[in-house]
Length: 106
Image (tube, rainbow, N blue to C red):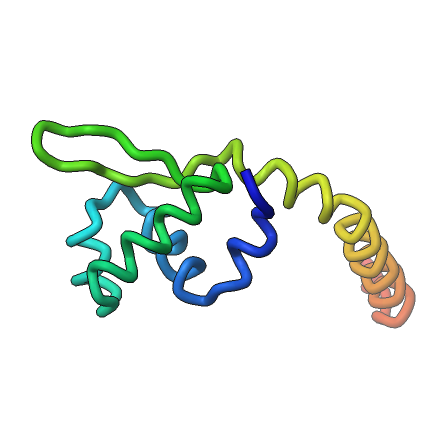
């Protein structure tokens, strides 16, 4: 494996992953759906596979690619402290809105 963060730096790879979220696809299906030349799709899929973000299975004559959620564990771990900051901001906003809104009397 190389660097999954670098793998996602390429916009076309993110587009491929976005499309694969909804199901397994062959290279030709991805090329047609995304309007990317088939050789380019193959190269991008290779990088995604090498970084553990996509897996491939054989279905008769077709090779189908799909997202491998396990490959996103590094992203999740890296984002965890930032998520805590984000959650803290939402908590502070909720407290502010609660204190700023007029109270309804029964």
